[in-house]
Image (cartoon, rainbow, N blue to C red; front, top):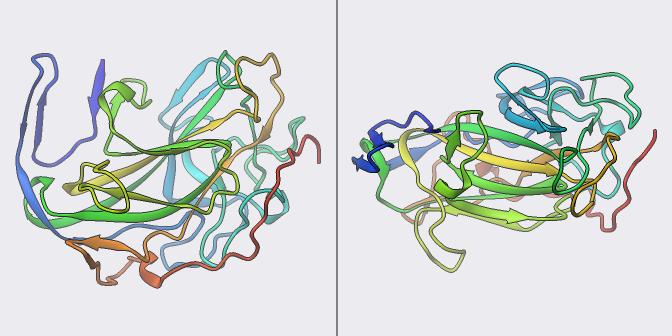
Length: 289
């Protein structure tokens, strides 16, 4: 069984395989936020909840989580104390976030006060873990349904350990992404110190291919983060290890028909390129603190 996001103007008859689409023209885009900031653009304190990014699904040690439960809900800001030195560091306008239920130590510790230790070992088997982060944002315009004119969103993502990005994906009944029915916009492994921009767009140009389906109304950026502890294949370890997501440098290039979207209200990312506090290379996992 699969389900789609509630998208204005989209009528899908899943069992019959018939999809009827209306079309619209985008004129404005807003509501994109870096991770770890409040609605005014200020940095949130470690351990606090992010008002924009949520963890909508998690699969941990063979169990699925969705709704408001352990590992799902508003994302938590990682305290500076727990930022791994090998991670891309927080910026002046963005911070690492992690799933609810994160602990302060590999052996456990205290929950939801800014730690980043979560289950996840390997790329397969019951000890692998996956956390799905979601940001909802509106596109306004004329008409309804699928956006027919050119829209592009530029964002940079760091994640521990790897990520896949989707725009308005089809979801399974448990909240996970139905990958066979959804378009993969971008992916990266070993992504904890990534500084490369990704482009989400509904047309092809020098920045990449058509990889996103935008609609007039509410849209969703969905980032699937796998916490593998740098282990390939199945692992018998059930130890906690660091995991999180950093969304920064969102759109000094957010374009509609090739023109930058005017800075309106909460549209914070158009402040321009973000300077990092420090670019760090290398990798070392924290096992104890």
